[in-house]
Length: 170
Image (cartoon, rainbow, N blue to C red; front, top):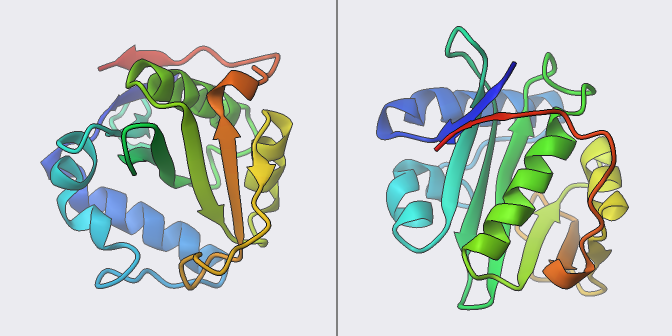
């Protein structure tokens, strides 16, 4: 069983290491002074601004996944840093975590979720499309390592079947 819990300041180095590991796996680099600077103060950049940042951990307390919802404005948030180590992938945890995040976005009062991704992340992009995310036409505003952008109007969310049960400790 995996548990979702709120990220804490003490998790910073493990979260950053996980993100860097996954990026390197797909031929990308962590950019702590640029597009990954949000990791330097998760509490301020996510929680205090009206979003959330969570980790997915096993019984031993090892972090196998991360994800955040960053407030863009009163109606919109951005799904950021949804990354999983290889041992967690392909078992339905991403689908369940995404469902949790979409439900959380609605509870936080958002109407839309936006995200940017890279074409190399085929499984993630397939999941986003499956649950109702639509691809944006103009990706000129994407961060340097992202070449695709998506959005989901929460009213259009299609809850996937076969969700894994997540233990939520928030």
